[in-house]
Image (cartoon, rainbow, N blue to C red; front, side, top):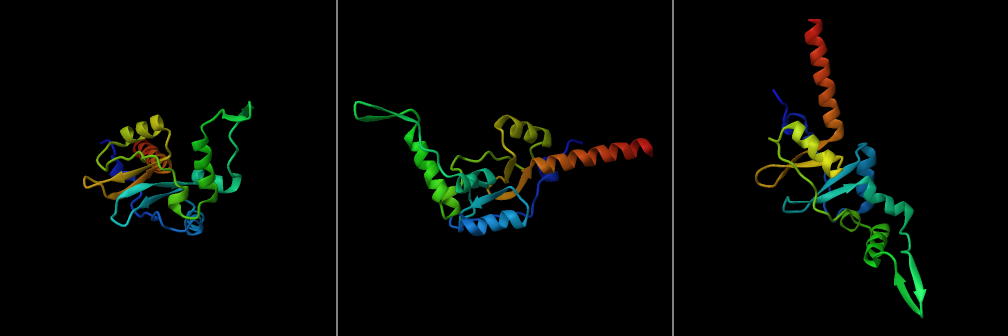
Length: 163
């Protein structure tokens, strides 16, 4: 039998709201040794995920965009809107100000573990929020969950051979 996302996902979730103060979210990540937090609105909808990568701007600050001066004009070599976003993240005080605003890649509980792992690989994500048919967050699937499932299957296989 092929395992599904529901068979291995983490169900007991730590979540934050967009209004959660950033220090509170950082403490939650550190205290529970997790690398990301689903961001859930008051109506229960998933708004995004706050990841450790989102927090790096708080430490590194924003890099000034490259530019050249030509005839008393500034010509940016990069998109200045990106710089504004980086500054906003570096100075953010709430989860909403720092989290990535890209729509998170999600999956459903009934999806096979193999399909979910392929999705994670192709989208270059380390976690997938799991939404039920109503769009409610019911779990999260991480790379660690997949590795633990692999370890269990190898352990079961060696027990069958030994037994």
